[in-house]
Image (cartoon, rainbow, N blue to C red; front, side, top):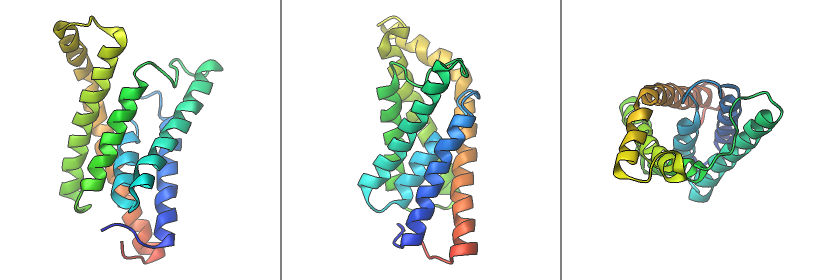
Length: 183
């Protein structure tokens, strides 16, 4: 069920913003980030789909800006902005869409949707890496792109499962303990 109260709305906003901040500080870990959790969580809990898609997207963008600034100041080895970003954001929006389609936030549903989100994001983002010229524009190049990304995929799966469990679990705990809301 979607949220209906002002208190729960702002709690959801805080959780999405916190995920964006955590993303900045964990940016050195390969593919372990709360990005899918942020998108899935926003997609599931925001009743207004414009907010469900735009708030996580804006938080993602501003965290990319912070990562880019860190790169330009020499604090990071990798830029926040790169040619495959449209594909990354498309994958991110696909995960948010999966959140809007979830019927409940039970553990089995979350685990399944988390795994599906990891696969969707893997397919779309690595297609973007291939499309932006990092591999030959052939079927062999596309296959090589996906094969060489496989060693990083388990980090994505683990990170997604962890952060999705953390966000949804922490939200349920805070909501029940402090807000006594029915969501």
